[in-house]
Image (cartoon, rainbow, N blue to C red):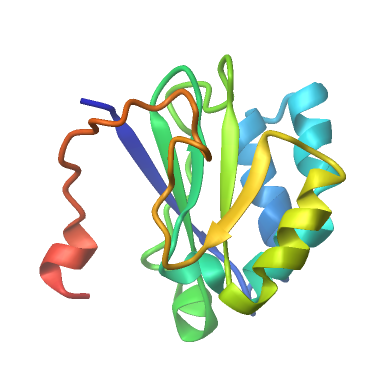
Length: 158
């Protein structure tokens, strides 16, 4: 069974979409400089567009690596202002260890241009339709037989 960590970031109006992506990059890189940070920042405009469209509200930004999988969601509007559901604390592992990948959720009508824009900067960072699950194409290092992951928000109907 694969371990999954989840984080939720306050976005608009508390932060603009670009600031939200910067905060996510800081979490993923653990504040370190290097090639991974440069690659993530190279797609900042595209990622900010996805965040501005509120795609990560219900569909996670999924980060896979040689360790646990990380799911990142965003809060918007009153939820972002209040911030009580935010969980932006550091991870207890390196989310970009080894062969890492990032899959951004994207609105169906924007998927083609987002995929093209991401390809210009990275092969590790891809986009998927918000209704689609992360596939092994998106995360080549994740087992096809993943165990059950409890989602308390979905269970409690919040």
